[in-house]
Image 1: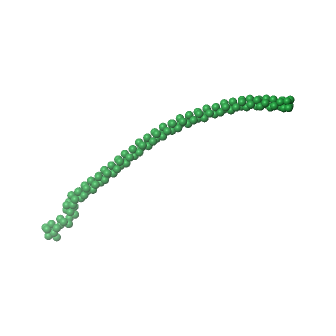
Image 2: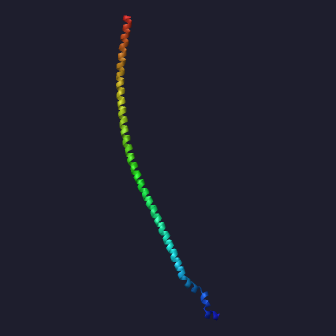
Image 3: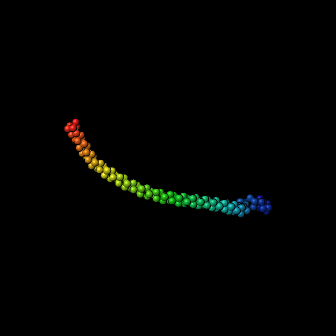
Length: 127
């Protein structure tokens, strides 16, 4: 075994010596992995930012649609109020016409009563 110490064969078997020689490689691999991870995170962040921009645009469009619907509803409400006013006016006019017809009905009944009375007198006395 003393010859192994003298030949330096023990250095190859010593784990501390082999880890020191591979340490720069591991550090480089870790740096590359860390760099790849950072790049993937940056790409994901850009994707998230794009998606948030799309969502913000959709929300703006939705707000515009809601505003347009609000104006439409206001116009419908105004038109409904005008329609109600017109229907109420029509009902009043129909009631006036009905009252007028009822007044004319009595007049027509009186006229027909007089005509029938004249016809009876004509047939009784002249015929």
